[in-house]
Image: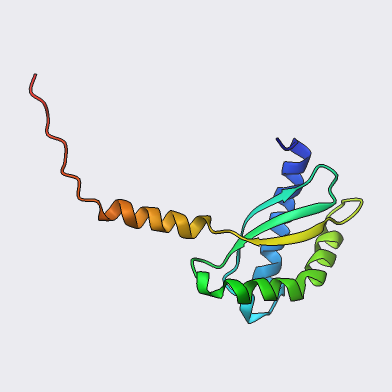
Length: 121
């Protein structure tokens, strides 16, 4: 269970990262990138950042390579825009949840369930 302080810091970091990806990082591999979740450990030494590229799983390797290349700049900007004593190490992870949710939606749409008949009382 994370503390309120961790949750606030994670929310702030997610906001900063989203702004960086939208406005300041010009790498074409990172276009359409969404930060789905940020988790910070209790000591604020590391942060796990979950990202997804708007349902385009085929770009996963390119996106992760782009993030690895830009990680120094991203960490420096996060440190500059927050008031943490130390800037956590950033660990980027591909978030498969949006793709799985879309698959489940497609499966549910494909089900042929007849409407329930009203029971007479």
